[in-house]
Length: 307
Image (cartoon, rainbow, N blue to C red; front, side, top):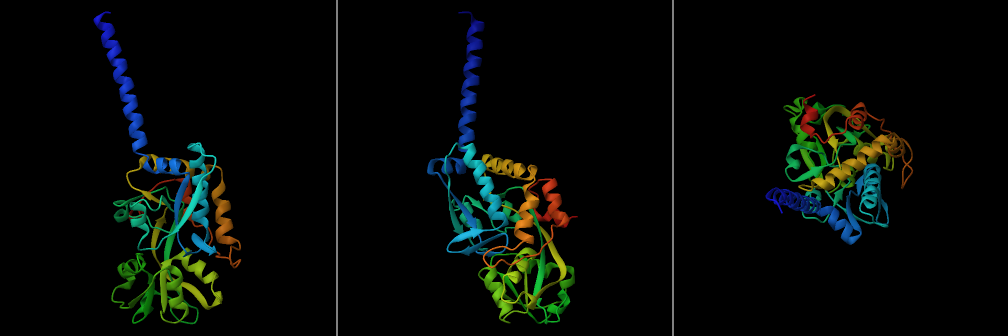
């Protein structure tokens, strides 16, 4: 055999070896997919009272806008992995433990109401945004409170592990406004603080405020008031350093958007009666969320504040 033949053979061997290494690297970079395929199961992180995004409907059942989107994503993942069935285990998470549970592998995909920001991006990854939130203030309708300035000397509720009160304090119109924070362990607890009179206001994502008001005993007793405190991308959270899983999740999201499903889901969860009480949240589709669907991206909240 000629020397040149040895060279060609060597090149071919190197290419084959390189391909094998790349294939092995792809598998190694998809730890979540490997886990799902080997177990035939996936753990979805869900919230218990983030109505209508992610919440319990009773008897350990969970549903909502983000939960349904995640089910669609996982159905796509199931097909890609060639699985005939895929068991979804629902893991309730809180504002405090949601990031650690994603980091340590307890939760494979978190489908709640987590803001994508630069600080959190150091610990986890986020899928492309399908919902853009406005942080607002809820009060009792007869409270006389209509703005941030009227919170001086009041008790303001928020949920442990969230950033809403920090956002309120940083707002330019909150300068010199001193109030006391009271904390609920989850959004239902925070709303109960307002409902029971132990708090004068509840600061949180507008959808959560509207959902809890709609699901309350007397929705007309409450209103959402004041300035928009922040505009934030709420996104599905996944483990960091698993680029293949993130790519597959985003590919599924792109399909959901392309086939026109998103307006139907919005109508279902925000504008029509939802379980368990057949209440209506009544939030119209915002221009910011529409834009997120038209221009899929995983930009953090800080990018939205620059606009």
